[in-house]
Image (cartoon, rainbow, N blue to C red; front, side, top):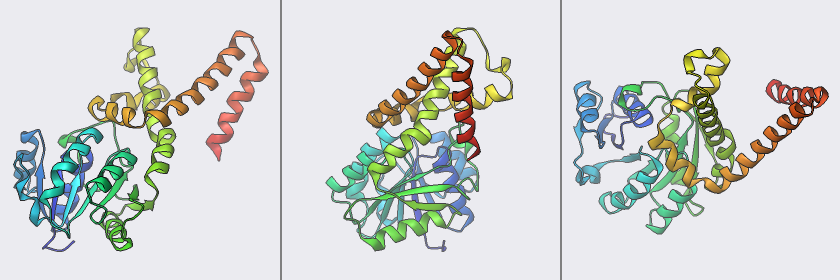
Length: 277
């Protein structure tokens, strides 16, 4: 980063707030907008954010980079508002967990020359400005998902932007990203949620669990405001992922109902082989 960089972050949650901290530490000028005006004031008081953006986002025209760091449904709406406010040299990116729809929307808005979708795999069950921390992106994989017709120079610019924070950019088509993340990210979230609900129905509290149980229910503490839109956006791919889990649960249930010790060992053994690869 150079002293002259001006980055606008729309959303000061875990990812947006952590990005703001890293940017400020590298000498960038950071402007921010968040529905929680208290979070913006706190970020300014801490010297992380240098100016607050009003709801009309009128201060975006001078930004060299604009980052949409909101839930995926809000980012879709924001992109339409941002499009006429930025100059032709501004890089627009986002941090959402689904990519196909926002990349498509950017193309419809004529932003192929400015928008490159991104998804940092640096999540946490905690959320909000209070969860943001410097260095969150260091070592994290960041999926970079440009439009099919994106200028290679623009893609390179976006890749270098994320790499500056110690992240590891991985280029991937938006549709492939959503199909992949349905299994690697979104499915674990829903399984943790389902397990938490089953335990709650039995009256089991998280404090009653051992370390393993706490591990697999950690994601149940994630933000519903963030994850409900993700699940809706990626519902088709998630449908197939959930069916795959249902088949495995059915196989385990059949083995138990039939007292089939060999089948049970086979399923447990197959899972262990996967774990050890």
